[in-house]
Image (cartoon, rainbow, N blue to C red; front, top):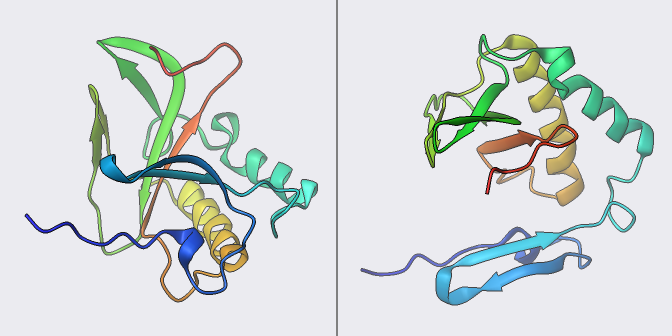
Length: 146
């Protein structure tokens, strides 16, 4: 099988040079970078707090096309998850023993789209933006389960 060349966000023309490597493992094709808000275009504390408020499970709700409960080895976790894909895709996301249907709640869709467009602008990827986002909400005391 021929490996497909990865195009990482940090390597795109115009990308911020401030991306810090968190994981760089080419052998496993696993990469993670951090763009610290102090160094990036997303540093407005009021804007970030508003995003947190808009997407908080207490604002949006759990179930009915919004946040869902996460599970690990059959046990319900405190963590909430959400999976959003841009139309026309309606695909779901599966990992461990969690099935994640795509977000369908209109309020959550609107919030994710607005936030995403701002992030795309800040990362200069408006011409070729990502087509999905996996969200996790960790309340106090809530971890990944392992």
